[in-house]
Amino acid sequence: MVIEERPVPVARRTRGGTRSTLVSGLLIAALVPFAVLTALRLVGYDGNTYTIAALALTPYAGIATLVLALLALGLRRWWTAAVALVLTFTIAAMVLPRAFANEQKALGGKHVRVLASNMLGGRADPGKIVGYVKEHQVDVLSLTEMTPESVEALGRAGLFEILPFHVLHPAEWASGSGLVSRYPLTPLKLSGDSDAKQPSASADLGDGVRIEVVAVHPAAPMWDRHAWVAEAKDLPYADAEHDIRILAGDFNASLDHSLFRELLTRGYVDAADQLGKALTGTWTNGMVPPVPIDHVLADKRTAIADFKVLETPGSDHDAVYAEIVLP
Image 1 (cartoon, rainbow, N blue to C red):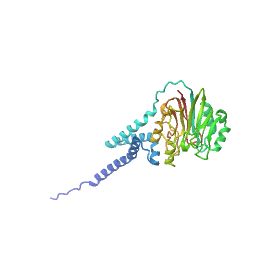
Image 2: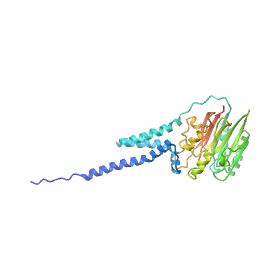
Image 3: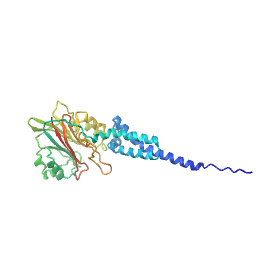
């Protein structure tokens, strides 16, 4: 009698095992950049040009890791799902508090209304900016990427009839900045070597009340990371030895950058964060989701009564508006 031995179908099992390993490997590979991003955010290290850009997308990373966690659960990759969920909850713990307003101090001082607008090399619609100034009764306007031509256009739109006082440093493309005010301005030098690009002034509100304002616009880190750091570090501290200080403009940084969080330790609060609106994006280049890199930082001795993000045709930045209550 001949007994025929049947071969074990190893190939089929191997293909199945290979497919399973490949799926697990792809999920883990997808999680690695989010794990690195989360670690950078936790330790407070902005890193190089690429990680600086990636950190601005931290809130969206939380959504991505949640999707990966659900996918891993559906595929029964339990350990991978657990790691993805840990990353999701970690990012959520850092990001979600920005969606909730903080209680504000009850102050009885003057109200100062500040608007900051990046004009994208002078391309922003001047009529829209002037319209916002009228609608919100703006007291101080911070303009960045302001060209000589855009100053003329703003003048034709009637800006200087509403806000007659100004400290302007127009320049070609992105280097021009300025402050325009309802109240008399005295030029200051609060921003070190970047004073021409980040002009500052003291505004006399009357009744012996003065504030100091800086038009903020450090270099974009994608073009010059070192200048981004240096120009941000040029910005002044706010403390009891000086008048109330306000920083307003395009910071090229979000709350997920350690450089920006360091600025807050200098005696400021972020107006958007105080009112639970710090997740609203203000900039997009059409290739990435909107990210909040335009801010109004107010002296921590003040209170925030209002904050809005205002669409600005012609620019890749929305304007930001804040109403600040002085002590």
